[in-house]
Image (cartoon, helix red, strand yellow):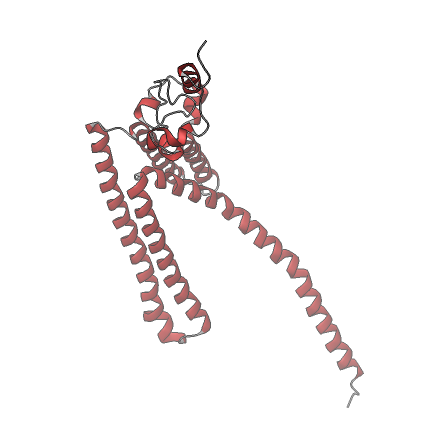
Length: 260
């Protein structure tokens, strides 16, 4: 029998998994192992796990539900495009406007699907698609900045050329000037954030989120108008009752006044 501390004991200890072996295996820590797409449980088995989002992971066969859930943004934008068409048709009675909004949403959804399909790929078609997204983002930013600047400039021009010479710089005029300037600044901040996001994630992902936000704002606008109308209706009886009380008090004071 081998003596304690001999070769057999050394071999037995070597075959046991040691605690902390993942952190000390060839200098890799947990973050590095996860970045390489290697499972900690199978670190020494020779089997590797595809990196999430990589082309190898997308080649894995997915069920129908998994394929749908992997394109949440695409589905949301597609449904929002249908909703925009219905809102434009029913609320604004504008089939052409609703059709334009729906086509824009469908194009954004298809572009987002294409971007997700080519994400992480090093093929030439993926590089060409990224270049196309970059120049498309530049074009959209230039058009949006030009349109927003023209709208704000025209509003300020009307204020200073027509309103100010007639009534002067009243408080209401200053409110309109501030509204035009604040709207232009907010548009500039949004376009700057859009440019930064598109440079990291491509054009269609921030475009899809922007389309969803605009659609929900379109749905919230009639609700806000309804709430404002209810507030005005509820405030009207109070004002009328106050006015009637004032009229009644005036009548009583006139009746109590001695006649000449």
